[in-house]
Every structure is written in structure tokens, then in C-alpha cells.
Image 1: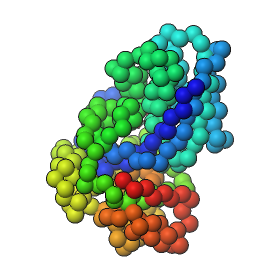
Image 2: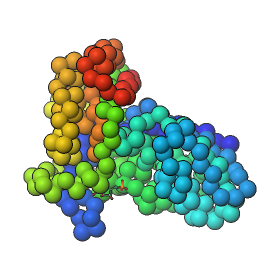
Image 3: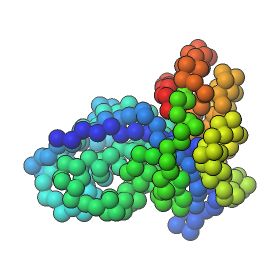
Length: 288
Ligand code: C5P
């Protein structure tokens, strides 16, 4: 049996550069792994893929990314045995935190461990790309700069500037569909054609220890449609700034917002203030 944590992420920068002929969007993104985890357990079974999940709202059939990852892995590795997988869900869904993508990548890594590293890293990466744009990021555990549709990942050294900072995640209790968010960009032509360089600029600032510059360099093109449809997310941002955040931003295609604080205890105070102000469904504070 193999048991693994499945982390989430925030996008410190998500800069859309244009629409592609294949319907996806060309982008550059600076992604940070966040230690809020789901947990996955893998065991061999006589045949088939038997998936169970702690959250009954999540389908456990072939539409689940974990199921699809397991199926792709077994086919690629030519394994005729089956697997039993249990998913303990803690990361909110449709939240822009990459929970499902992380689960898919963790499934590839977990099954490869269960079956004695039958597939190479390169082969896992190819499978990950086929499962979703964010999945390859989760095959590694460092901050990364990703380009293309997000699947071309360059790992970066952990940002020592952020070490010891507090990160507050807040989720409003409703999700935002990723295809919806991207489709809306057609109504925001300026946002649809961002100037490249923002992701590298923030990576440079972090690598040079310029923590005070981080807030001004956080950027997400997908905020435009999300803040228009859900003004509450703008109110969240104002409140988090007033509570002393160095910066705050919606993550991915939403609906989560993250806020960065110089110290975890300031982040925890902001969490209490936030919960007293809004009836948010879910919050978490982590020390980076
Ligand atoms: O790759 P993934 O399955 O996460 O993408 C979900 C949807 O998000 C795509 O079908 C597409 O509508 C949109 N998307 C996009 N451009 C990207 C990533 C995702 O348009 N770079």
C-alpha cells in the first residue's frame, strides 16, 4: 500500500497572452505549492479501478480525474491488475487551488511507487499533460514558472524570501468553472492579450529578496470576469488589505482568494477578522 499527501497551489501570477487555435489560452504563470493537503491511498486489487472518496459530492466514476489518471497509468504501463484508491478530500473544489489536478498527479506518482517505478518521469509527464494543464506542475514540489497552456513547467528554487510568511486562503462557498472563466475573456480584450514578462518579474523580485514589491506584482487576468460577476470577491480583497496583507489575489480561475502576510500570527488575526465579517465556508492559514 502507498499513501501520499496531495497538495494545492496558488498562482502568484496568471498572465493570459492570447487565445490559441486549439481553444486553449497561451499564458505564463508563477505557481507556488501550498501545504494544504488531500490524502490518497493506493493498493493493488484483482481488477478494475475502485475509487472511494470521503466527500460524497465528488463522482467516483470515470469522470473523476483520479480515476482518469489511474486508467491512463495502467494502460501506459501495460498492467492488467486493478487498483483500489481512497481519496480523503480537504481542499475545496472548483476553487482555483488545483486540488483535482494535484490529485491526478499524485495518483500517477503513487501508482508508479506501488508498481516499482515502471514508468519514467518523462512518461509520467506526458500522461500528466493529457490529464490537464495544471497536472504536470504537481509532479514536482517546488515553485515553478509555467508557460504554454500551463503544462510546460520550469521548477524554481524555493523562495527563501517567503519563508516564515503567513498565507491565508479564503473560499466563498461557491465554485467558479474554469471553462466559464476563460470563455469570458473574449469580453475583456485588453486582459486577453497580456504583455509577457510579469511572471519572471515577480520571480526576480522574490529571488532578490524584495518582499515589499510582491504585493504590487501579483496579477491574475482571470480576476476581470470573476470580480465582475462576484463583487463579494472584491470586498474580500479590500478587507484582507485592511487586515495588513502584503498582497492578495484570486487564485487560478477562482473562486479562492489568497493573501500574503509577513508573519503567520498576522494571517491568523486576519482570518478571525475575516470570519467575523463574512460567512465564508472555508479558510486556512499556512506558514510558508
Ligand atoms: O487543461 P484543463 O482541463 O485544466 O482546462 C480546463 C479548461 O480551461 C479548458 O477546457 C479551457 O476551456 C480552459 N483553459 C484555457 N487555457 C488554458 C487552460 C485552460 O482556455 N491555458
